[in-house]
Amino acid sequence: MQIGDKAPEILGIDQNGNEIRLSDYRGKKIVLYFYPKDMTSGCTSEACNLRDNIATLNENGYAVIGASVDDAKSHQKFITKHELPFPLIADTDKKLVEQFGVWGEKSMYGRKYFGTFRTTFIINEEGVIERIIGPKKIKTKDHARQILSEE
View 1 (cartoon, helix red, strand yellow):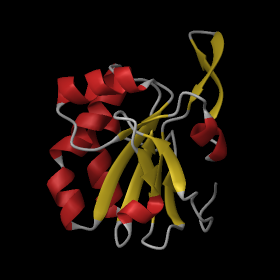
View 2 (view 1 turned 180 degrees about the vertical axis):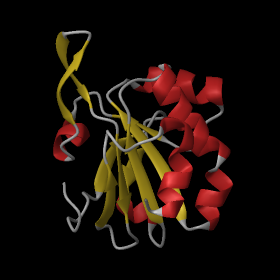
View 3 (view 1 turned 120 degrees about the horizontal axis):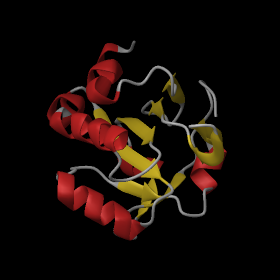
View 4 (view 1 turned 180 degrees about the horizontal axis):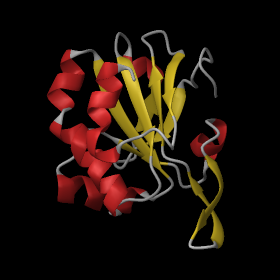
């Protein structure tokens, strides 16, 4: 997915088994953020920063949706532990990460593996991708400000 592309109507299934659809968010901009793994330090920092700034994001017309390949049970624990006020898509079949092009080969400590590239897509009120904040640009502890400042 690139800037200017229309996002898919059905994004996936959240931690409670509910289908997340673009049309559920009509009139709002969607912050669809992909992250590698529940309960890891960077992903927790990012989620908590979005949680702490959710009122400001909402006031500015944004709705937040997280997505990772973790299952619903893992998402439920993550949400409960950190009191996250937004849904997390359980993309266990990797359909959404592949559709958005954020799944691929990564390397850590010389070991190669496949995983999710931390990426945020800003989807406008018409369902079109307006901005993409890529893996090298995301500041997990200051992500809400990045979204709001459009940097």
